[in-house]
Length: 295
Image 1 (spheres, rainbow, N blue to C red):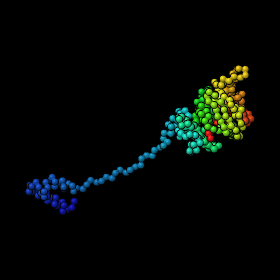
Image 2: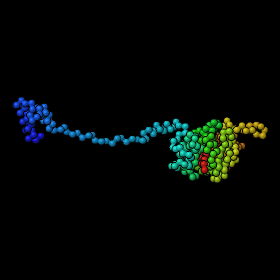
Image 3: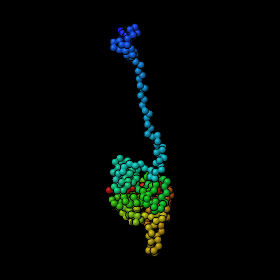
Image 4: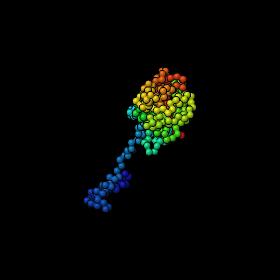
């Protein structure tokens, strides 16, 4: 406070005390006291606390929980899509996706192969380590089983719908236990409905390196351990069930030539996962993958 201002204020107090007046220069004692206090130094200003960056969020902190949840899922796939087909999936990255081939049907999970043989392939069968049991009944083969990221059979009913209403190609990839890779490709492929026992109705021209191991099975019914198509021979006796004899499920004809849903193992024999033209023998194969693509 300046000396002159302090002098005036002190003088005002003295005058009030001496004269006993309630008013000095139009102000009461309380007004003067309030004015005097207003000239006191203001309290020191405390700066706000220093801003600290929030802790960084760890996007992977719940990864283990996510893994456990995914393992409970029937097919263990992430939902991306839906797309009409694998060919319309924009990223062209192989993996599980949601597809909706028909607008009035619910989306379905599918594994798309986007790199090999031009991409756009929907995988309908995958085997590579023997972890899944393929010696199953007709209902299982109709609905499908396994995980899309592991060994699986896609399901005859879905395969029927995907092949019955559009032109479809079939690609089969094979590899033996020595690492030899071969493939078989057909420019047409279609199976019948459940009433037709999902028969192999169409099989187009072959090209590839594995040999035409499916031609012999053309027009055959799909047979499982509990479903032989109730087919009788000339003697009016039911034919033998090749699915039981070969421990698999396939479009069998005389139980021979190919058995890609047979037993998994590095052994020789018709009960194993075989494709006879691969090595002109019933060599058990290490890897099999069947894929379809519409055009």
